[in-house]
Length: 147
Image (cartoon, rainbow, N blue to C red):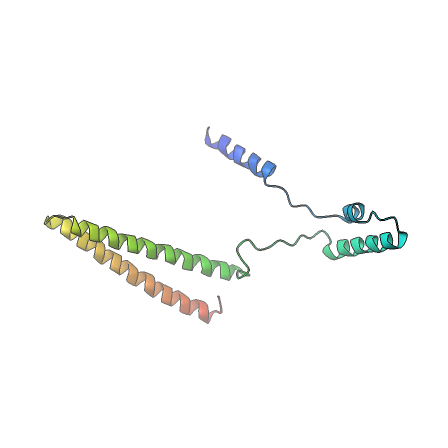
């Protein structure tokens, strides 16, 4: 399947199976909820549906999929930046393990020992950069009142 076919298939699947969000109209509210025989109760139900329709005026309130803590773009940016920094910390830890394995399995070969040491040195330098950038960004975000 070529690229265009794949994109068309994914878009079709999105529109067909995503389940559209639909607002309840005043007429649908009256038809589904106001089916009682008593005229007073039916009139009160109709009034409730009309009030809800006027209050909502077709606007649907959706929950924030990113969480309740993210209310502004600045909150989103800070969470993305600190998440990215966490991933880079994991990569630095992985590089420490790789460098240690290279050094341990060098078998006395000078070039392999040097390669392992260099990997450890660069991983340590990477951690220093990660920690200092974290401290700098934290100070900036706290100064600018970001979360």
